[in-house]
Image (cartoon, rainbow, N blue to C red; front, top):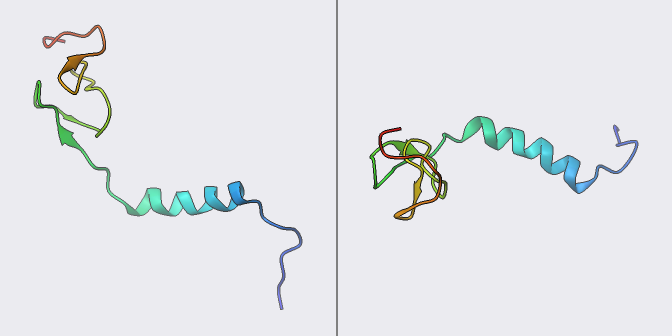
Length: 63
């Protein structure tokens, strides 16, 4: 029977498993409450720069 030549480290094993999850799960987006643009959850909005009701980057609502 086939046996591994050496032990596979946890990080190497997890990197392989992460590729499977990245390909199968769709990207989740939410609408920014300030400007309405779709953005990633728990991230500042790329369009207006707001996060949780505050301006966290130097961008304005006009771009």
